[in-house]
Image 1: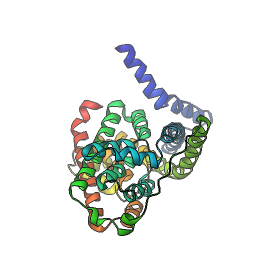
Image 2: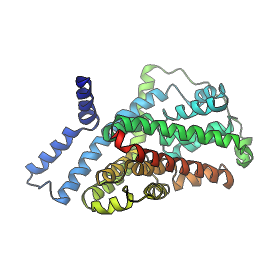
Image 3: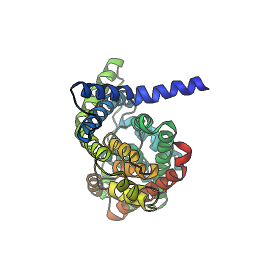
Image 4: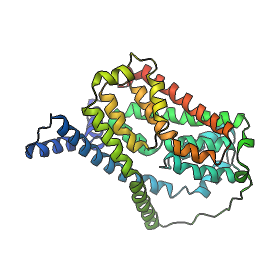
Length: 337
């Protein structure tokens, strides 16, 4: 058991966390006569380390996920979802969302396509919630920083929110609140081509490069904010706002995160810095969920497809679910970290 634990620690810290890379960067800065304990130099070290780490993990994960996704084009996903009914369909939709590395805005066209194709509304909403909030990439990235227990629970709770959210929308019979042009649109059934292994690898490479170009600016912004929090924001400020002494920290973090637009690759550096400064785990994860699942651009896009009552229900379900998950993580923090 000790050997397995030691092996896992090496994998988490050196392979996923790339701790040795941080030491190498620190040594390189020192070799240039730069004092790493200095706040400015410490911020530079944090920035270089986190950008390299996230970019390497991002490119590797998106390549693997995109290769898997090549077996699940929209047409095939629609057929898979069409075989199930009730909560089983919501569960499958939420799980399918985990193999689609999309941000909240990128998930909406697929949501519209699935809804136009006649899939149950609750099923399409389960997909819409899980796709940006939970994916295989988030699992590995969270493991690299927070450990396996936190990462697995994050994914499980995210899937639960997606399944329950979709089920509630289905039970509420909200179809009349979908814009008419969505319901009357005709879905064209296109049989997915059988791709060769080389074509799938090419597709995965193209998706990796496309995703990288889209998210890299947000990585730089997220890491920059994380570097400021890590080296410049006083610890007592973070603790007073997001620590255990503030019972409304989860709500505050969720409300602050919702209007922002980024994906998990841009929010993880901020979350890492907040946790390091003394913010509670659940509060940090609520912020991440809020940023990745709901954003002002995605809400504006979704409003073009659904009417205000359905949009409001969707937002309320996500916000309430994220807040509940945040408090659950705070209650479990001592056990899982």
